[in-house]
Length: 227
Ligand code: CTP
Ligand code: CA
Image (cartoon, rainbow, N blue to C red; front, side):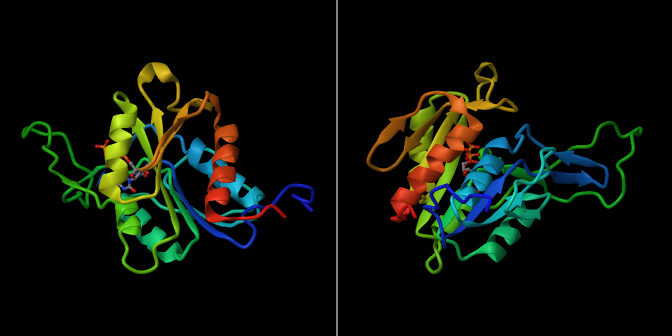
């Protein structure tokens, strides 16, 4: 009844969305984090569900509500996110909107680290697995449409193109997240769709409008027909 009169271009499709930041533990009370709000990823999950898809949203720690009609799997760290993504496959469409921490602390402390005569601790970082690249490069069970995001503060298109090639995904949704763009934590987004063939720049829109337009595009790329 909810979507009675809406077109359902993703009906019968399985969609996986990652969203939010990841938190990488330093000790039991401290984490490495980033400023992702999860708004764009959550809006995509909601839009895909409204378009008739069966949606799994793998979300890092966010303060926004779970979208309606979506299966939500909550994770903290990048490695937990990767395991949840693997468990959620197969899918027809996988959208990687999460701001995954690039690094984690090599050996997080089992006890709270105390101040002391030794001075501040030195944190040794190691690189996290690239969740998107792992899925896009799968020999078996690769979703037919794999979409990444590229949040950049400069040379947006150039960086998006190199990410597309490096990660092996089909499409990159590139956006400018420099501090004066207002994107991080804000409600609006200005994106460009970057594929191997072309770059398409979209006007600034609400994150919900971006999500709905992206879902319509993904459905068309998958060959969905409006019911
Ligand atoms: N991504 C991912 N796993 C990671 C890092 C990134 O799945 N460990 C995904 C993001 O969800 C996004 C895309 O890869 O869809 C690009 O993320 P981004 O941080 O822009 O790219 P990086 O490869 O991490 O490069 P950098 O941060 O150095 O620009
Ligand atoms: Ca990164």
